[in-house]
Length: 216
Image (cartoon, rainbow, N blue to C red; front, side):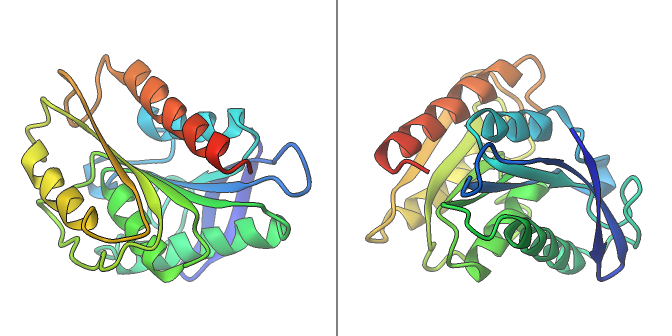
């Protein structure tokens, strides 16, 4: 999986890129957990999301946000991290100008940043949010949510209780024109130890369903 270096607002951004299998391949951007909690682009859930899109022919990029790994800069409380995400999506789009679809996937803090990016990029066709920290950050900006997508959470998540995610999902489901899938994995914690296979199974099935409805 080729390493790429992107020019970001705080210097270089280190990423891993899997080219698409055809010129008009769909694109997917994958975002990692909180940098201050050890989050990086090689987190098992992040890598799994990358692989799931790659296996379905997407041109897929994951990267280290500022201050992580070889990426320059310092943690910026989400503001700079959102700018990095926009830069990464710009890079993906410029390298895939004929992309048939655009998706954003994120885990934990990455899900929060990904959903903010979604609001700023109306061309986005779908999203995957794994363990979104809806009790730590205000998700009220999702009004309205511009795309259909999947929220995946664990029943044993003690960091973000499932009820907190359900509150956001229920609000989004009142909107017309989008469909929000919400799946709970029995026994999975916030960190998905011993449940990576569930991420593969559930996210993979969701992507297959969406791609069957609207081939990329």
